[in-house]
Length: 291
Image 1 (tube, rainbow, N blue to C red):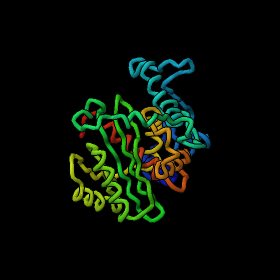
Image 2: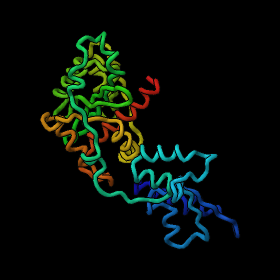
Image 3: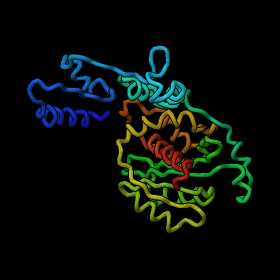
Image 4: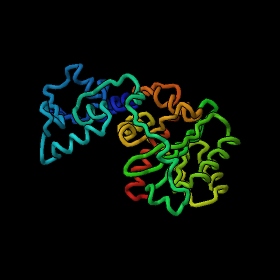
């Protein structure tokens, strides 16, 4: 989806790939149609190809193109769990130039916070009430960014975002704020994005945290917007947000940034969706027992 990557791919095709074509040699180009601006899209537009074969996962009758690859049931379930533009591009070979809000409030799911407020007071009884607690901290890289720390209670495949630290304040405020939340909730794991000043932040937390929480620094290397797009359907389906979020200032700012994020990725701020995306990826590993 990155225009820079698309341009680099096109330059590589022109220089490295095309230069190896011999006289009268057949050329077969295979690819997933992510965007109309990709190499194949430009080839179609210019009339480069003699023949185009498009294979969609599901046909016009919602039946699998090949039972030996995957069943119709598999693809129908996958379509339900995948963001529409991702599904259309990766599985249907229909590049969709995404527009609009990626996380409109009407597509998010909510819960009554009394569900967690009524949780057992005793830590010994708590494991019977939930499956686990995990959080992700996306540290602020500069003064315009916000530190985002969504903490989730995991229960029966759902993630309840019960508390959030979301502020543009400096480390003199954010580190004590994160420590206070961790000490109070005692999550099993908290990951800290280690890019920029994240390693220092994780080290500070490790030195000052008392209890059972494991602090895990992690580097993010994939394109941020692509990462958010790929996890958006999972967040919409399995994450639950507080019904009373508008009454909680930091939570409200977090939700406003989340519900304002554009499918094009051209949003001024993306700390809230980025932190939730990293938490979603963390949840999948947590469920699979990779911690």
